[in-house]
Length: 510
Image (cartoon, rainbow, N blue to C red; front, side, top):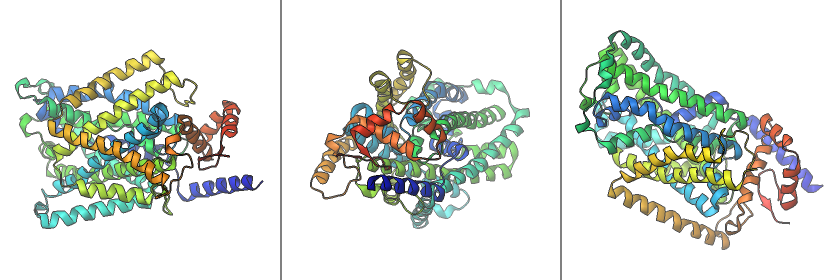
């Protein structure tokens, strides 16, 4: 009776928490995914330069989404609805291969995400320095970087719904000038310009890194699954809506810029769309694009910070990190996890753009190989896993779906420099060392962990139980309740018989 009352109190607290901290709906989620992946065409200019002209760049952003983005989005949709809890891909890997590899996946992806986020305050100032040269001086640049990072970190602290609706406004402001540019460019377009390519000047490493960076991170939003209203329905729709938005946000400016103006491919570098805007529409369009580029970096930072912080929160909730990472502020945000991610951003902001780009691509590629492997593994070994959304392919078809992106991942890794191999190897070894240290710290009770299941005794099925319980906790998630009810109570009964699970999803031994 006492335990029943405690469960009811916890459920009431969960309902009150949902009212105070609203869940993400489809429009803010589309905007967040858009910023996780893209943020607009800022940065795609290098694909024209490294591709030796417009042709390879246009083909890349036409074909690459089909070979890479679509499979990744489909896999993310299936697994995120199967494990609708914070932590995302960490839960997938832990369920398929065990907690050790789940922890490694989380560490690699978090490190990659923090490196990615270190780019955006730097790029923000790079756009501003064209109008305000003072930011070329380190005396002004360093305090500005710190101020930007602190301000954007505070916005993340104030609530995920604030970040989501901010992303909607920023996306509208960032994309509108390119729609205007596209309309103004129509009378001046000469399709023959799109076919120009100089294969002697193609730099394949830069070309593939540019495509890969501008079309990856579809899985990042999975770490927010526990914060989404009705994830069973919302997540797949948001992913496909964001996919269409991302592809259009690249192709429209590229088709307009390369087709309406005669340019030298060597001129296409970061920020060149502002110059194209001036040539097509005038100085007012140039200023608008520069402002949009600067603000877009804010949206990119906010989305990445949210994903990184809630990933650490999810890892803590299932016992892979100390409980301090799961501590929430009164706004429902993971305070310590946000601070850790912000600290990593500040420490890595001294690195160059190209160095960061190649390092984060390599680490991200390692993590994605594990995610595709987990997708196939779970299809084979756990065919009865609750999948509210399922990719409409059998096991063989799923393997075929994963082959093109796996090939591209291996290609990106093979094109990496020796320095990237070394740095990535150090990060991987650091992750291998951290896991047993955490086990030792937990054994000695040096730090507190949320989960009462010992990490070294972690049962893969507990990941699924954790996801199901969190799904059940979200009272407002009508679709998930329907699925749970429709799948009969046998699964719930089996979980209850095996473990007494509280509403926060921790399996307790009798």
